[in-house]
Structure formats: C-alpha cells, structure tokens
Image (tube, rainbow, N blue to C red; front, side, top):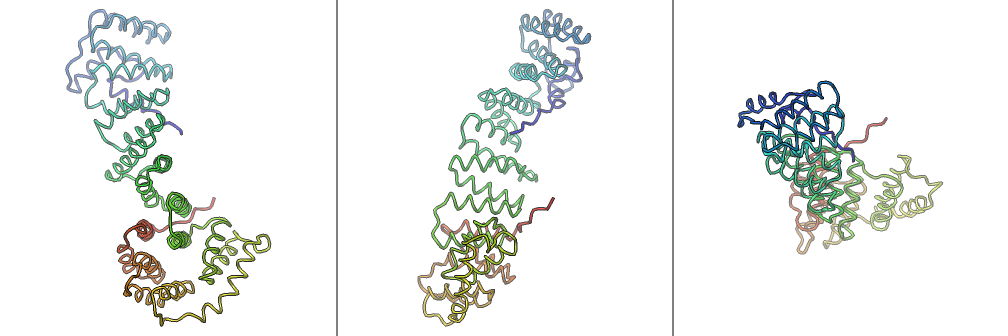
Length: 412
C-alpha cells in the first residue's frame, strides 16, 4: 500500500527543531517552553554540536554527518543524545534522507528527554519510518506505544499494518476494528482504504466477528451498490447457509441494486424458477433490460426465461390465501410477493407466524422484505428486529439497507 509520509513539521515541532538547522540553544528554549526540565549539555557535546552547526550553515552536509558521528561519540547524557539526534534529524531533512531521519527519530525517542506530550506523535512517526524501512518489530513496538499513550484511530490502523507485515493477521484485524471504532467515536468517517484492508485481514484470519463489524461500517459509511455486492458475496462465501437463507441474501442483493454480471442474474433465476417462476422471469428480464443478459448469446438465459415464462400462468392461477398449513402459507406468500402483490404476501406471512411450529426467523425476514416493498418501513423494522439465530445477520443487513440506502456509482 502507499505509505503516508510522516509529518515533518509535526516531528520538528515535537523535538524542538525547525527549518534546516537550529542551534542547540534553540532546542533548549523549545524544551523550556514545553515546561519540561531544561536541557543541560555536557561541554564536549556542546563543542561538537557547534561544529555540526557550522557545517550545516555552510551546507556541507557530508562534513555535518561526520561531525554528528563525532558528537555521538562524546555524548554522555540523555540530554546530549536528544539534542544531537535533533540536529541529525535536521540533516536528514536537508538531504531528504529518510534513513537518517529514521535513525535520528529513534534516538530522540530512546533518549527519554522528549516532551511527554509529544511522545504519541513521535512514536507514531517512528512506527511509520520503521514500516518504510522494513523494521517491523520496531514498528510494532513504536505503534503499540503510540496506542498506549493516545488510542486514536490513526494509531490503531497503522499498528494493524505493522502486525500485518509481521504476519499477525488476527491481531491486525482486531486493531483495525478498534481504529475504526475510535474514529466513529470521535465523529470521523473511517477511511475507506483502512476499512477494506481490515476486511481483508479479517477474511484471511477467518475472524468472522471483525469481518461483520467492518462490513457494516463499510456499508454505512460508503453505501455504494458495488460495495453491497461485495459484502454479500463475502458473507455467502464465509458462512454455511441453508437454501432459504442463501436465496434471501440474493433477494436482498437484488433489492439493493447490487446484481452484477450474468452470473448474479442467472444464479438467482436458477434458484427460483421452479418454485417462483415469475420471480425468475422478472429477474431475467431486468438483466436483459440492463444490457447484462443477452438471449441470443446466452443459452442459459434463453432456456431459463422460456422455462420460467411457461410456468407463470399456472403458478399464478394456483395461488390462494386459504392455506391449511405453514408450508403452503409461506410458499403462497412468497409467490404473491413475486407478482408484486405485497398486501397478500404480508397477510399470509402474518397468518403463518400464528401457526404452531413456524420458522419465525425465516418468515420475519420475508415479511420484512414485503413490508419494505409496500413502504411500511416501521413495521419492517419490527419484523427484522424480531429475527434471531443464524438469520440475525441477514436481518441486520436489511436494517442497514433501510438506514443507509445503496447508491449507484457515478458515471465517468
């Protein structure tokens, strides 16, 4: 992925340096302003730093680098090491050399003399530098410390990147969830790239709980129809679903406007043409109208459309709201829904719910879908809220659909 460049201005301010070169006295003044113990340089270090600054002012950076090494050799205290590292960081800035900046920043943090208030951003920057350098253990340690000091969304997600680079996929997934939750708590919209990376971490770690949380965040923050398709496809791949639940997920995908390509339309038609032929016929006709399906070029499309169309008249004639059992009540309700007669469907689903032994979760999913189609949103919410067990996730997706309606991609 593309790394963010650590904020040089923020780092410079945090370590008490600015511009291309600042005298040790300026760093001391900055520390005083930050209300930390004044820096006290040893005489050998002070003299060595004077020589460093002279080389920097002359823009003789090769000499400045050599003088920095000499200064390091005579450093005897944390204060010495802190100020020397600050000057080394300046040299790295002037040379645009991230390796020098990384070494210097590591020394600044290790010195123990940075203002504690600045340690979160310093550790955060150090972790990013370490990631760029491929030093993943250092990155983990620095970013974990940044989280300990300031548990912000940015700190969590970059720590997740470090865990991922260290092949700790499960830890990475959990950290992205925490980062996204921190952003939401702070009133921020989580960055889409991080949500998607977290979903990939969760998928690879087989962490279904984190995957579900991040999928929900993705759809609520970025409710594009293509995103709905991807989330539903991932859910179907990662869960063992019974036939009815699998079918009802495809129906939600269709309602969300998230059917894409011949495969999606044909799969839904194949799943419905025997029991609900008008639903199959309607799906195929929608695919043809959208330019996705072509009867002349697709044998599957033409054959399915002919089979479904041939069953519609008899199927519609067989429907009745006088039903002696649950099976017929649910079947007829679903068939009525396939013809757009949602009033009859709602009536029969509710009749089925009153029958002993009914699968209330499956029926409430379908009742809720018909209520949505009929514009009875509050009643639909009640139906979905009543769903428990394995179908609860599907009900949650329907509620998400109501709260964050899918939007089509903008052309161009």
